[in-house]
Image (cartoon, rainbow, N blue to C red; front, top):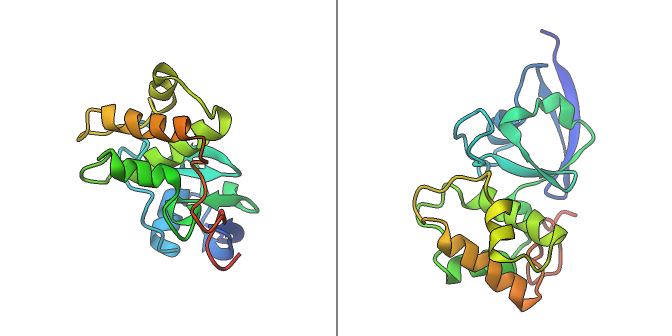
Length: 169
């Protein structure tokens, strides 16, 4: 198979990488770029562990061919800011994760939810995170964390630095 060079803006930094046409974005992020927050879960798009923001929208990176991301902007949980965002802090304060496996995908999904709907009710929160599986928490602490941020009026997507990406922006 012919290899292709693709260029993406990943967490604020322009990155180029050589991929094969059948390389999955999840594998490229983890194995070629060293970004470990998107997790390998079901590899079918069902669990949400590999969730990233692609051009501002959540996608399951296990379902995206890397070549499709050429020219795109990707944000993983590492790219949300240099410090904890209000949403990340709320996850900590509400004990919203235990093992942490679902946390990056859940936080990115909740970030998108709060950008679209800054004041969701509990049913909207549950619907918003319904594509992300968590085996540890029973979901209530996650709902509580998202509700905490929505009621505070603080953004879920930027750290105290006020930057949306890494320091190399």
